[in-house]
Image (cartoon, helix red, strand yellow):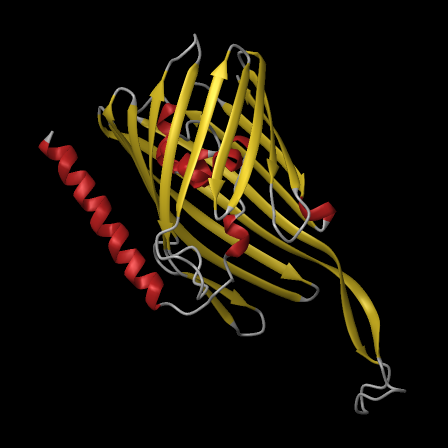
Length: 315
């Protein structure tokens, strides 16, 4: 028990350290596309999924969750956020090995089409009533992140994992590359109580543009816990989380709080989460043991709401 107490103390110390760093940091949105999530189930449950993740989407949410995989697992997700203004796709594949390691690879793509590039009708003259901007081309902004993940058990109830994150961004003739590192862990305090965390961009992910500009994605930390009960012949998971470093807006709270619940009965699962003053609602169907389908409704106060669709296949 003392060893697990030490682990908790390490988590709390790390969380406070990253939180203080985030408070001191300036506003930076270069890594926002990395926060959109992967998989309809995980998005429905929000940040607290770091203490639940147990399938191929763990490459995004918490690589240590890959230790729960006993079969090859393929996950596919697609959505068109805000009435098609943002294309959001995620694909992940995970597999166990004969040794103590589990591996996975994931691809996150976020694209915004039909961005108008303009210039003055007479570029050599000043802006005026007769010299107005005209559209010269329409371009697509596309951001990619490849997650190469591995996980293993350090002890019977304590798993750790890491994801090497390869980033590629492009719009018109502008391109950028970067590489980052995510570190995650999960452990069981009791058979029905789990704690998980993920430290994203642990090494200050640098993204270098071909214009000689450099963006930096600062570290962020999510710490969550889950509690499982089995009422009415089904299974219910209640989870909470808090995070820091993910947003540095002046109006952001240093340690926001989120809560989620998932109830599964037979082939159906219902999900709900509250996070960042919005609610996500999800439903899952598993008509066959090896095939699952999920849909999530994402609420947004200012933009159109979004439906996420995904499929999960084990073989």
